[in-house]
Length: 415
Image (cartoon, rainbow, N blue to C red):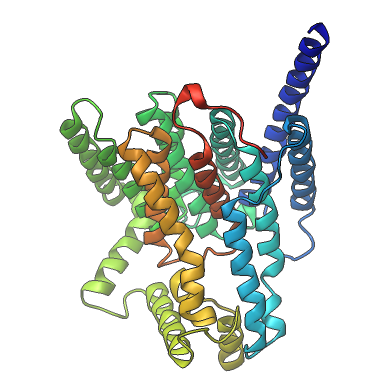
């Protein structure tokens, strides 16, 4: 018995060390994805280091926690994304360009590996908490980095975040996720210090000039309040969050610095849809590409024109690299109805599962219900099937479903 207790203590000690090292490796991986980006293929050495460090620490945590004789199985998310990759590869047979079909696969295979590691690691509530807190910590670091290395004279110039070498829409997406996670901790979990992170993240989102990130952040906070129907003084809370959103909008329009960043873009968007189709070149260009994707979809509605071949056709006709700016129509044009069903059934599955748990009182499912709804809404204006940071959230959403709701029943899942 003494030897058994000693062996158990040793395993717990090593498990604790492995958890801490995993947290460090995931923090570095998050930074490489949302902060230290590079547009030059093969030159982002920090990402390569963080990627392999994360794989090593995930393997170490797996070995330390794995029970002898336990089975190794593939999570449903891994099976889902692997099927999508297989369909993408198969589409090269009927694609306009065989080679172009394989261009995004390197990123997608990396996503497959990272999300598998997340699915295996996040098997208890404390590990889900570690994931969420690490995402927030990396987001705070990103925000500090942006303001530190961007001259103060350019803070309100619009499209803040270029210092990271990432697209400001990617910065906006990272900021939006930070807004929602920190607001969840502050409002739902009553850890009020996170309101500071929420405010800072929301302010950063405004300065990126990303309209969809601003709307995603605001709508997400409203959803968190509205769906948290068990809260005391529920209707008062709903009125407060709606009033807060109205105040934020007024401030954007009344403070010149804020208006110059995103207020003008909101005005041009409203004018575009209300009366003048020439008032917003960005939206007009997006609609042009979406219409092109619809046209390609009509050519082969069942299987599409071949994975990534929307980009190939655009390059062939206009010598300009672009994408459909719409995840639904990008997939539909490339992989047809089959591709849309193969990709989006998993979103619907996660949403329905979390809605049911949310109704039963799960706070984690409240968060993931909101996130899944936002993804389904805003993927109409962005392409995400190869976005690492979004698929990390999907991995956490899947893993959260595998953790028993009864605290007394929360044992370890078999890896």
